[in-house]
Image (tube, rainbow, N blue to C red; front, side, top):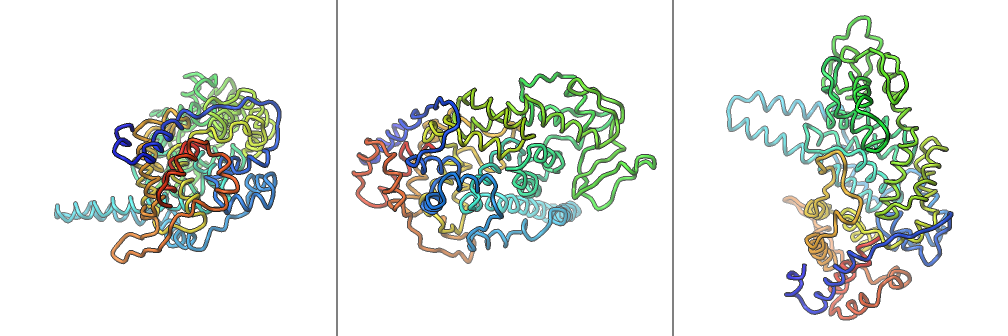
Length: 516
């Protein structure tokens, strides 16, 4: 980082030094009981609850009052995106084709490619198939970013990212590039602010999760413990949740028969088990593959009876005190501080248990706490929060034509959507994202956005379209609110800017803009 800035002008060098200093400018608040966010903290609270404060969000919350705005975020109505953003989503293949049909079409393309005798033609057809998988996955990522940028239901979109990270799947495995968009939309986003038990069940029944964690290979006499282990360690109880290796083995037995069926025909199920067969979309419970023996899970008996065993196990996991604590702590880690305040976590856990895992109620306990209010402006942004918040601040509700630069930036900073290979998800604390290399990249992104040269308003392809759009950062939001949070050293750097583009770059790369 030091070398990078030595060749720049004095203001740029000063800005770089500030940016690096900003990496250390974090802390946590210690608080007691619940308290409302103070009026002067409005932009800071919006910056935390949303994907990043912008003028439109600030004006809306100021008009409604923060408490009313927050309640609308916790219990949102159906989102209406700007017409230009919705039109992009409506044109997508993942919007126009149901998952079953999309999978069938792509599977047929794969089979047709495999049948080609000519080696060169076969290779070209297989490459075309892979490119189509990539295109479908990119559509999902683009839709996700458009919603993050422009949905009025900002908390729902943040929680969708949070749960996608919590129930992580990697698009690079098998045909998950076809599945991941539907997984995000129907399994995760639809339940992001609802009951944890329903969310847990939706992820378990989605082919993306089943395939990613190998449960389609889990059958009686051929047990695969992968999903059972992660279901307890990463999704519910946590690594210190009090379960044993025996519990992993017993849960794996419970999960036998839970799999996927990507074809058009059902398996030939034994006559006496046919009533047990279940299929919904690409999800399948095949009783031929299920272990019908009795089990003992988390100290209690589970009678062998098929798919109902899975629901019993999920009920037990979702209502366990260890799950309440594990989920509450992770939410506090994401929204409050890298060292989650223990007292706050306990209050959130109590809410989780008393409301049967009502996610919105747990979030309300957190968002109305003194610890939350005292932490504002101190939580370091991971790459996704930095990129999305910068574009929201720079362009407000002006809809980008091309999310490609944003996807590229996230890949450069090692946090691409659906790109985490291991099931633990991306790190939620500063230590994973505050390296000098990361900061250099953020400065380059700030410069691209601040100068208006990022390519966000130029489409790709032979008939590319371009729309003029210059970032408006020195606006009413800055002068009414953000300016009051800027440290004297940052103001000094901003005053040295010789052009609006340079001023934008300095602001977007300032320590204050690295935190939320």
